[in-house]
Image (cartoon, rainbow over all chains, first blue to last red; front, side):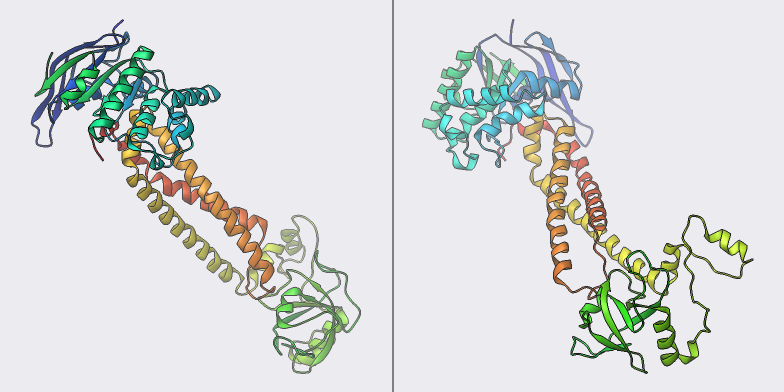
Length: 224
Length: 270
């Protein structure tokens, strides 16, 4: 079963003056199980829109979205919220950890957003932090962690709900070259180890070597 | 007016002398002639047990043999004496207000629903009140209560605005964070619920500190210095009102929380 199937997806924004902007035009993309796809494009090309639609944050104007066999094309806001809670992992551009929670709490907060599992979530957070090499940092606040460590906590948070698909939004843009390469290596290792699919949104061609495949986007259109 | 014989905090104090046969709940049976029970608000004026104080222009001496609580009359400390002491003091100091033997200013009748029945039985020759109505009929009592209620009301209104602004600012500051939480699968209800819990917990902690300070101040400040009666129920009702104000103030942030777009978490460097 494919992790993601986008078929002829269009997203049109209506502006304040009534004009329409096509952010995504007839986009079709399939991400296989265990596959890491780099989505490359300049600013304003539509990669953020595609990432938001693939992650169940935005609804498309037209087209079909199937994630791990579940068709979410016609889901309403509440259904999408629940779907994201259970099936999608996000790593944001600026990491966006909760500043007043420590590393472990930043992971367990995911459990508290939905149906709580309590002790199981605590154990999973401990396990993920150990696997990500942060076992001795679980009590540290984000401000007490380095950029690379914060990025690892964000990866751990994305994996807390055992997602079917993880979306990485410019994961290396705030890091220097060496740290960026380390983080990409870590992302590849962790995704492959778990057999989890991922889309890595970037404008940096250098990180494509860590992905299985690259897809380019320009003016809302995809080109393999 | 009374003048403590020994050196006190003040030479003169306002008092109201009651002569009684049937003791009110918090007052013992009538003392011997020439003796009185004093309300403990008079302690602030230097009145002590065993002290002889002089009443009125005739300087009628009475000995304080004990204290009672919550019997002030119109801001004046109550003195509770036998009928004979009251009549002789009244005659000596207020000859114009002297009453014939057997004539009383007020009769207390104990029982339920007596007010209308008494006035009906006397064909309107009496004016009967319940205890609460009688207290409120004392000049100035309702005005004083109204003033304090207005102060409490304004305090609650200010608390509502302050808490509302506080949480509105907190929400604005954290909009980006709420966008991230929504992207991760938090519903508006979860986020707003968290804000509400935060408001309630902060208010409860603040109320506990304020309540403890009120009790402490009440213990430190001499009775009668401030015309406020602190009771657990008044502290609890104030806390309940503040909690309501916190919940109402916090709910001003609901619209902003609902409007947070989870898509704002993606593609921003903020």
